[in-house]
Image 1 (cartoon, helix red, strand yellow):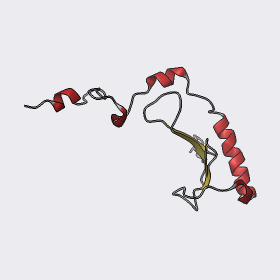
Image 2 (image 1 turned 60 degrees about the vertical axis):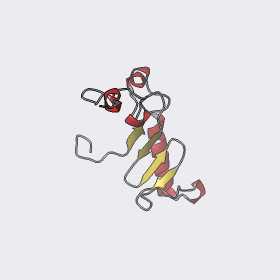
Image 3 (image 1 turned 120 degrees about the vertical axis):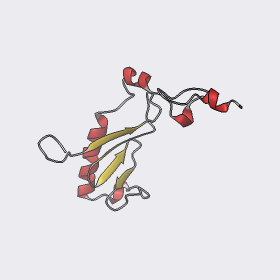
Image 4 (image 1 turned 90 degrees about the vertical axis):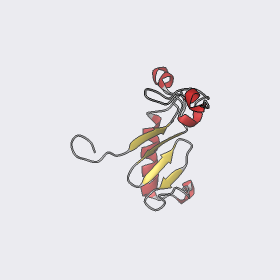
Length: 116
């Protein structure tokens, strides 16, 4: 919700667990529809598991208007992340190299592999 108590027209999300210049997934959505940057468009009220992307030829007026709105939202975030944010990324546990620590308080992988 916005500060005035009215729902937002859309929300933008970027999924990039390891940081970097490009995302694994980016999308904009409203209460009914979700549009990915790769063009996949879903009616999330009817297909919340996103198994059946909507074909452009099958869109009604409401869906076409929503898609146009979400495309405009995505255009605001086009391109790679600013360099400052790209440099802040750190790999997830699954992406780290052997022995690399994940942060403060993280167990030292080298110590964990020693035999007593």
